[in-house]
Image (cartoon, rainbow, N blue to C red):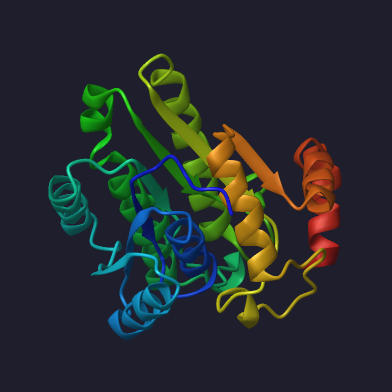
Length: 253
C-alpha cells in the first residue's frame, strides 16, 4: 500500500459513508487524519478501528451547518498540527425538495451544510496554505451539480455552487503551490442514498468509490467524475436543450 505525501488531513462527514471510508483510506497510508462529524460515538469507533490497523485518526465533533464555528474550529486544528496539508469537504445533506411541496426548513438545512458550511471548511485556512506554499483542498460535489434534477432543487443547486466555487479557487490558486480538486460521485451506497425511492443506475459500493476518490486526490485531479458510465450519461444530459431535458425529467419524475 503506497503511502501518501500528506502529513495531516481534515475530512468532514466522517461518521459514515464516503467520509468514513476516506478517513481510513488516508490513515492507513500514514496520514494523521482529523475525522470530523456530529456523531461522536461513530467517530470514536472509527478511531478505534484505525488504531487496530496501526493508523492515526483524531475524532473531531463538528456540525458544519454552524459555519462560523466551523471556520474557527478548522483554524484551531491547523494551529494544533502546525498546518493541515489536505482538507476534504465531504459532509453533505440531501432531502427531497420538490417544487410542488417545497419546505423552507429543508432548503435552509441544505444551504447551511452544503453551501455555507462547506465553503467555511474550505476557506478557513486557504490564506495560510498560500503563505506556506503547500496544501490541497478538495470539495466533494455530485453529478447532480450538472443539471437541476427532479425533486432536488436545493441539493442540485448546492452542488452546482460547489462546482463553480472550486473552479474559481483553482484558477486563482495557480502557481501558489496549493492544489484544488472537485470530485463528482454518481450513486454510491450510503445512509443518504438508502432513502432514495428511485432507481440508481451504476450504483457503486462505498469501498470502490473510496478507492477511486482517494487515488484521484493523490493524483491531484482538478476534476474527477465517476463512475465512467454515469459520467458519460450526465455529460450528454448536461448539454441537452432545455425543452428536451424538461421532457425527459418530467417522465423521470
